[in-house]
Image 1 (cartoon, rainbow, N blue to C red):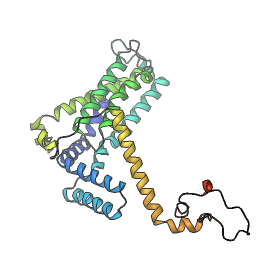
Image 2 (cartoon, helix red, strand yellow; image 1 turned 90 degrees about the horizontal axis):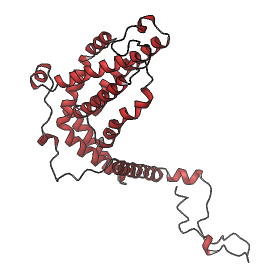
Image 3 (cartoon, rainbow, N blue to C red; image 1 turned 135 degrees about the vertical axis):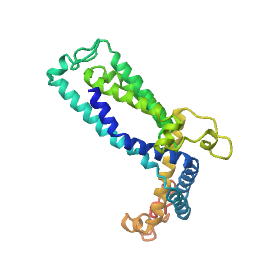
Image 4 (cartoon, rainbow, N blue to C red; image 1 turned 90 degrees about the vertical axis):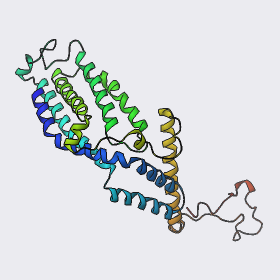
Length: 291
């Protein structure tokens, strides 16, 4: 199991190196991309479509000029995830059969690879190594605007999943721990400047390059405050889009919608009819008509 895991990870090294090159290239342009993305988000919350078009054009032109795209950072996870799922399902099925070779194929305190870990040490090691992989991957991977809360949530995922993986067969933990160890070794080697230069991976930006010029950054907020802030921004953007859509299609909405009274008293009503009470008169009767 360990040899097959290492062999599969070695076959994925070209994809990993390409992802590292893309991440290093993106890191140099990330501060400017963050400013352009923030400008686009602010324009979308407004009511001027020309401003949105200009902000989007600036962002797309900058990405095309410097050949950077944050979506390329998902290349490595898209390739590694099917591999992990395939190993996981195959080993779990072999343990459920069980395959005779798994009965005595273990080591140390887990001789039976088809049974759960009797001491619970492998789940703890896998959880700790997974947290380290996520932490180091967040340091060297592709960052994006607003990724702070997502990163903090990823830090908690291994601990949250621990109760659900305690009863996995040790064959799965053997693969998982070997894969995490390979990832940690790979990350450590890619931090060596000489090796990065030989593999064609640009060095990570320094603190001066990573910090965008301008005023001093505000104090970091908690994860709940950041999530609430992003939720309010998303709501404001959605409301702005809905408002622009209504302004663009208000004639169709008025033509297809029900007729609504836009006057305080119906002139076609018979004489002597008591007019509607002032409290029942809408303050803005034209609002629903215009959508």
